[in-house]
Image (tube, rainbow, N blue to C red; front, side, top):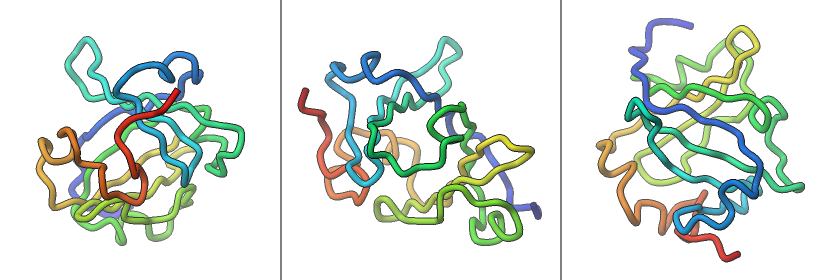
Length: 138
């Protein structure tokens, strides 16, 4: 991968659905049959807990292995000539992402013009392709 100015963004961790389904901040993405809950670990680092339904079409490595996400300056350049396991897409305006394999480890890459408060802020996902609503109905 060429120099694309990688900067740590978050950790993604698959968990069993019962661990997050009843949390009031869990979001559901019908596109991937995926549930997501944003938390911070004991170091104050952002973590996205992900659980997947039976209809999820995402790569098994995404559904079973933790990943680290980085922002980058040029996502098209960053994903060129590497195995892509989640194609580049724009889940909401100003935020493009893809997942690649590096030494068989899933890595999420993000190119964005948004601030961290805009990305992690309440209501960000209301009009998004990924999360059409903020809450999961249990």
